[in-house]
Image (cartoon, one colour):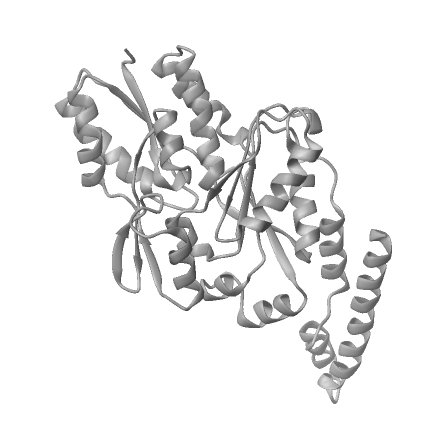
Length: 358
């Protein structure tokens, strides 16, 4: 009989069946939908399709992390049963839930001095976080001790790569991540932002890619770039989606065609209600396993750099300031010429990038 349990938050976004099959315990976050509170319980309180339909219709959402008292109530039955605990939390880069877990750990260790509670910050989220949990379950089932699995989690948590893209900018605007103007322009241009988790577990926008077809190809290119042994990668790959299964299936099909030694089929799960409350529908998360060092810049990175260098300016503030400083009668007369010249340079940059992509 095992003398410890492995545990995570519901934000690992695996299914109830998966958690049970792998003997992984979990504790639920909370969210509100139009003022009514629910548990983030893997779609049991409210089905995922209904949740995302409500968001698309304009429902207000709010989330709350697990507090210290809830962690104590959750941990204590395991301790009473003589079990030690290894709990992996949602990334500290997007949530403070690890602080609640640590407070509960300190309180409970006073009452159960013979038991161990080990806490690890996953630095991940959604199905990438779930993929890490699956690996830890493998190690436990191989007979590894609590301390061995803990050390593995601490050492290898950043080996999981988390890549996300979205085809709908509505909730980026609503959440204040981008301005209304940027959201409107991005919608017209079919911009699909591609993001990943950095080494501090924060979600960082990396590329702005036009069209869903290109971003699907790019996210799989990123897997080939970073996966151990590149396209000979033989680990698992999980995808989660927020009410856009067809897009997730398109990504999975491309992964399975390009990675012939993958360990089983790509597993597709739902983005849960906690993370989904912030991202909205139309979000995909690709999580391959072991990573390798970064390679060269992609076409999208070069395009982003070139367009930023070309720098369309509506009001050339610095030039106006210099003209005023050196006695110009009409310092602002440069505005018209500045707009025309930088518009031309930006147009040339875009044309150049498109020609180079061919």
